[in-house]
Amino acid sequence: MSKGKLKFGVLAVSAMGMGAMVTNPVLADIMKAFPDIDPTTVMLISGLPSLFIVFFAPIYGKLTQYFPKKALLAFASLCFVLGGFLPAFMTHFTLILAMRCLLGVGLGFLMPMAADLISDFFDGHERQTMMGFQSAFTSIGGIMYQMAGGFLGSFGWNHAFYAYLLGVIIFLAVHFTLPEPQRKTAPQGEKLKMPGKVYPSFIALFAFQMILFILTNNAAVMLDGEKIADASSIGVALTLMTVGGLIGGFFAGKVMRVLKDYTFTLLFLLFGVGFGIGYTSYTLAQFFVATTLIGLAMGVLVPSYWVKLSVTVPPPLVALAISIGVSAMNIGGFVQPYVYDGVRKLFGLQIGRDSFLVAMIASLLMAVFVLTEAIVAKKGSLRDVSAR
Image 1 (cartoon, rainbow, N blue to C red):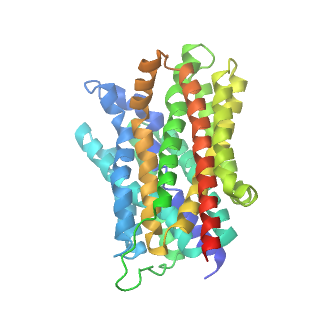
Image 2 (cartoon, one colour; image 1 turned 180 degrees about the vertical axis):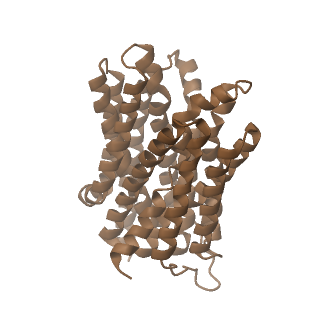
């Protein structure tokens, strides 16, 4: 089939990966519709899908060894559409939460599937470029779903859930443009294990998402609390992060080829610079620069790790490795508020601005961590070459 159709089919899967964001613009309206439900519980509408991604992404990785990926795509799309769309007709809050869990199951399959399919169909520089495009299309999907949710939600909070019908169109487009990839299996009688050298990548993805969520969870607290910006301007700042991720994704392949082994070190340093600017920002324009830089680093870092995992593990384990990486990221995002709360109490810090200082220091420590890993890996490779 034509490379154009193949690329379209693979990238279209990425557009569904940020589907949980549909409800973000209408959370306040849902709180008003359910005044007897604690606001923290209502916020589970946004958070529950991420929790289910943690558990179901690795399940996807294991199932790829036994089932066709197009069948798994059909199952994931069904969970995505039903779990996303059915709350439009529900008035019982518990049922809505149950549907958000079903949505999380679908996303747990779809998020690693996007990068996994790229590793199936593309190699070398083309794989690097496509992984970057996958990150960009994920950002496009996030923008698309948030805008659709906000527009439809203006007619009533339950109308926002109609946005999930876009999943039907995307599924049909992917189903008819994407061939079934050849299943990769281990040689008969050989039991494959996950190489030990991939675990630092899982740690880095966990830390990256935990640091990133410091921005999304504390931007409004800082900007609104210090009277720097109102809600609409805060929304623009976070949108600029997504736009930065979109731009970074499109150039990720070139960045990987230029920076090579030091890609992750320089990206975590850029992450640190962005949070440093955020910490010292007392004007909205400065904060816009901070979120854009953080977004740029995000847009390159994630696809770079998918490329690294896809070439580090044996081909039959690529889907599982990427799935574990997705889970590690979602665990990092989920535990971030609790980890920062512990750090804040330990050092007597405040919520808001001080969190950006913590994120900057954590980013610089991660830059040292990934640099050390790169040096150790390089020495190990040289020893292997000498031994041969």
